[in-house]
Image (cartoon, rainbow, N blue to C red; front, side, top):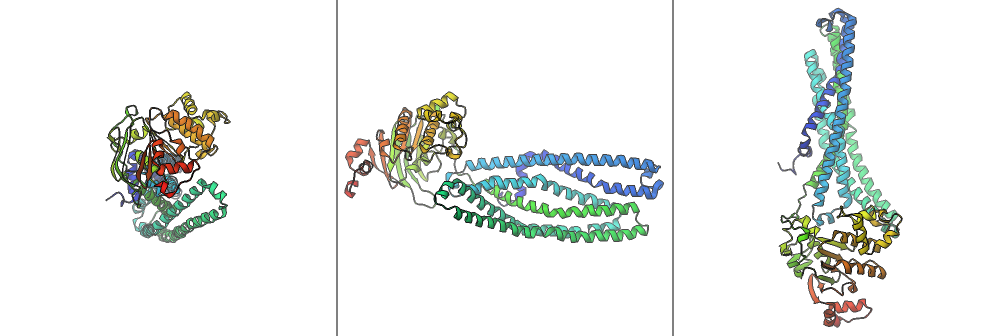
Length: 597
């Protein structure tokens, strides 16, 4: 059977195979706890037997003739049984809970690791909130079942086996009365399970959509406020939350009916045992002590079955969650990890794109039959209109996407053959959309170079012209900058990103619109730092502001996925083509259609 079609919990038990010993220990403690928990009715039966039969009681047959001695033995036996029951209860609770924590930890880590290996298009097609719902809510739901549900199933099974066996030993002619409701209860449980499964899957889906929207709104809270869309978003959350509530209500309406129906069936078995067993005891065909034990055991046998409703409810919720988690883990990883090591110190930095064609999912090719060579140590610039394919080249170099055809090489080696970690260690990206993590300034600069010394962090900040403003922050390098660096200005965030790239010290530097969102003064500061860090390394600068790349060794002008012009700044101005027209626009001049070529 394929893993996709396999029952969710069978897959879960296969996944948890590494914890086989812990599962057996927890299961054994659950069973032993239930066995000792079922002993008190037998003790009550023995006590009744001692009081009624006295020297002719069951214990007297074992050589304890005195009633007092028999009661002492029974008391000591009670202490022993209660003590062992309590000991095994502690043991199974601790074992199951630790096991639940361990499995949910491993499952979340494996799911997250799998997510990180997915191609970038996977994330662009899915909501962050939906993925978070799987990593958090679904895995937590699974933990809740392992925490208590697994133990409950074991204990109910133990109860049925132990008490059923005792009944057939003590009074086989009455035992069938107590067991009579069992087939109906089991049939009802299976029927409820089949009807509950799709309802709980709908619950998990609806909570995923709700989490996705909440995550989206919290991320975009500034936009919501600036467009006074608070009420609109409240209504949207209200609608999604209502869908979640209604899907839960549909599941609850069915699951809540389980226990009352089971109680009616239990009542039939209990009443039959009470009545017919009592008649046998009155007729002398059944010992009074045995009858007392059976009445108590019938209640202990059948009453726990009412909890099957809660256990079944927990099981169905966790099964739906398990299905979603393994659906994520089953997503194929299309990015080849590579097999050729290329240590950073051996990278020279020559990049070649040979007849590369690529298009995003369900869209026409962004670049087609594209070729470009960047000599090691050179600084080249790529300019062009929005949508011409500039940033796509960056994503292909980092293998965030895989090319459809053609070849990209680094120092003559196909980048698909290079170990993915080695390839990305050789490249530092400073993008327009700077992402900073919630943490301190130093932690963000050190990100990716986690072993860097404090003095190296300060040196990198100085090169990026960030040291002065960092020193003025309340706690300097230990200042917490908030989620996405929201406590800093755009220029400050950009300079921290440059400092992070400086500290990485890669042989290849990619600047993707690194100064597009800052003022002129900040741009000048950033440009000074870039002039320093581009020395002796291969640099690819993508820019709208042509003033920032005029000193590049070669400038490539892209148009509709192809290179329309190439040359130095002066050469391109003399050509009077697209680049010259763009330059005049940015310098405040005008150009005609004829001038644009």
